[in-house]
Length: 282
Image 1 (cartoon, helix red, strand yellow):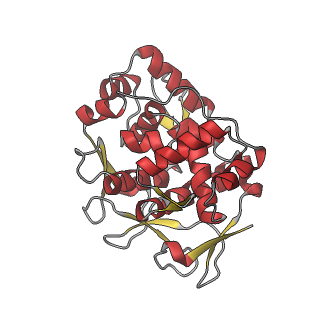
Image 2 (image 1 turned 90 degrees about the vertical axis):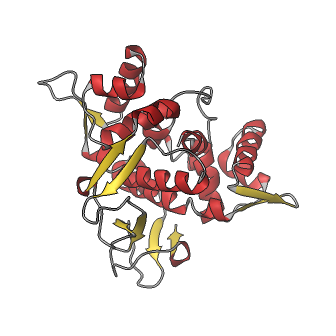
Image 3 (image 1 turned 180 degrees about the vertical axis):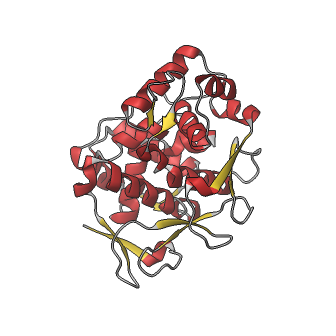
């Protein structure tokens, strides 16, 4: 999970992947022209994706591997959240199910039992020792590079997944943690660092503080809508690092009793969606 947050919790990295999927970008100059990122920064991000097995380099081109293709559901959930909860919705392409022609966000489903899944239909198991490892160790330094305006589409979601601390706090909130003391005990964070992250999430509209209890932090509807993003991040982390220790967060689907294996379903015809079943249209 720590490696996943470090790799995918980055605005430029998500933009690289979005352009690879939607515009079939493969060459350095294509990403450079679209993002406006400094060459050294773009080179470092592409190298990190190659090292992680998400991209492979062949004859000067970068192509998505099977692991890289597996990030498409994360990107769709990020798109869905942005479409509903940010002012950038008018800039985003339409998500279309090719077979039935339905346009609009899909719904989250449990691949095991086929039912639709919401945060209220799940229980989240917490391993506090594992959570400590998620937030310890190497962290990216500083903010990501400034991108060209046309591709600066991940600013707001970066408040929730842009570093290990913020991602862990948001994940715990999705797991039902509310009290300042509970966040601190789970993450071994200093009061100053925790206060700063919680304040940022409140300012971003992901958490709110009931007036009656200043030490209580609850998810807003905007925050709860991040559930699909986290469900697919956890699933991808398991796939990318099959030999790693157990994750600190595990989502249990209450209706079927199994660990949630998320999938996407079309709202129009209600069939499970595969990557090649959908397209984005500008």
